[in-house]
Length: 128
Image (cartoon, rainbow, N blue to C red):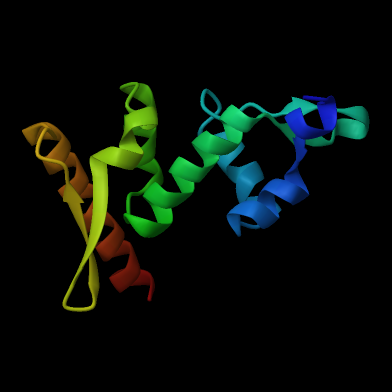
């Protein structure tokens, strides 16, 4: 594998994940332990495959499963981010996205997920 395959530019990652580059830069600030791009010439950001994998999980947790930034931070802090993709399986119920945790999810994780969901709903209703 040569360096061009191993390091991917922020623009290429943005296209792959369908997430704007400014959002990726924001996530770097929010999740500094999980997302650490390599800086190249002129301060350009380059991502390794394992970082792109973590970005994909974060994107899915935020956009598909409805977790908040705070919820994702908790998963990272607890070391659960690599397992989060399989822990939360989204289902559709009456046209609304509902998070269905796996059976081995702890009661505290279920409560945290519910609180994150309610916090997001409150933000949408008060800002919307």
